[in-house]
Image (cartoon, rainbow, N blue to C red):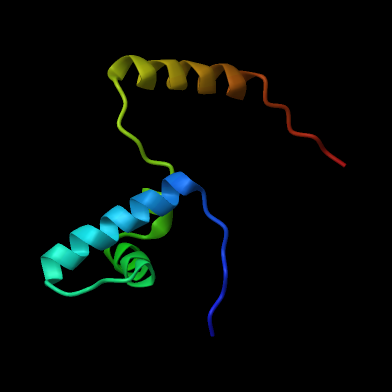
Amino acid sequence: MLKSIKISAENYEKLCSISGKLTEKFNRPVSINEAISFLYKKKGLSEIAGTWKMEDKEVEEIKESLKRGWKNWKIKFA
């Protein structure tokens, strides 16, 4: 069964790039669907979702922001 999904142009470009790299690697056409399956088998999609390269300064800024956010976290009871 085929399904339609909406993805950003950026993600579409990344999937096309991965598909192209796999096409070169396997020396045959690789569809975007097959590229997604390849990624899912290689790593769980949750492991690669939202990953990016960043500098140490950015890591520290994010950590500090999370610390401040967790200090303000309040659990609401019914």
